[in-house]
Length: 268
Image (cartoon, rainbow, N blue to C red; front, side):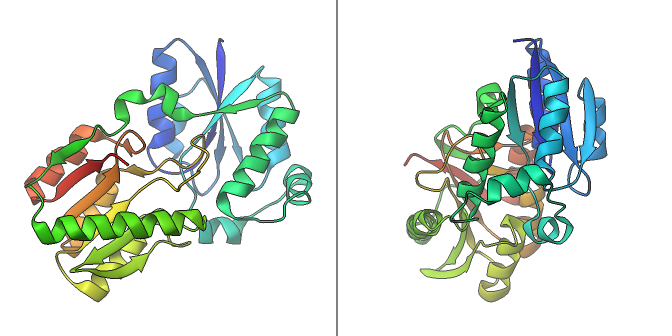
């Protein structure tokens, strides 16, 4: 396949995907979202068109015109801003009319089905970024203390329950107390909220939602999230092995070592 479509959200993941796909000889055609996608993505792709959040039909037309038969969704959306700036077109309204729930996974599955009905198959970005998937074990920082191990176990259990409700992926814990659950605010704001209640030393757990479609919204952490953890004095970041993308991995792990923040990847 010579061409791959990129439906780009925010953060560094769209850029990392584009580099990996082009290194594999693919032409990358991007539909980037105004107010979300970094403008520098234009330097990493072969063609780029800018759209508004909610313009499903417009994205389909852009990709079809470029001869795209497969596409990935890469990068997140700041949900509160996305809701404020939503510009639904006929394509999104067509998808929404068939939904019983507008929770994240249900909506994304429905969007993917609509793309496939229009000849564009949505595939996982992780297949192009296997080197970024977290290996099992302690990746940076000092060994976990017993209390931290208990907090990681609690956070993982609560994150699984949160994920089954299709709400979020991140939980903040300290000394056996659950301090914050991720909702529409996103990972970094969740960490700040938890640390505001628990102070320094909080444990952050992020994991894939049980039953989540792995084509969408794989857990991802990078230097930006670690900088938030340093700022609030968090001590541990626990993620799910082989299901979490480590963005800008060398910078992430070296920053964790300098800050003596433990990063550990757990096997489910």
